[in-house]
Length: 129
Image (tube, rainbow, N blue to C red; front, side, top):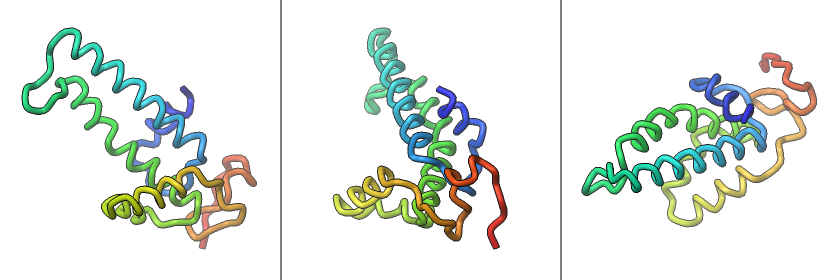
């Protein structure tokens, strides 16, 4: 849960790195919370017709949009890729599969052009020129 809260605290920070654990714990809790919200909305019948979702799940999804994008970009930085690589998701099948490979791969062991390896320096941030 601390990883989830860490992402929320850095909600608009698109610089730096996000370790694999940080990204996937955030993704897991998002799926968990959204599933619980949708179950409650379905049981209380407050679904908006035509959309299939209720107002609470839509508000949650909008609230988590920027932190989700930020942690996605930081995760791509961690594997040495630009945040713009997330646009590969618009390439059917192949783009999503390649992004998934990047998201599950281990961090760069060396310093890259985005930031130093957080595993090597245990969270100390240094400027990269």
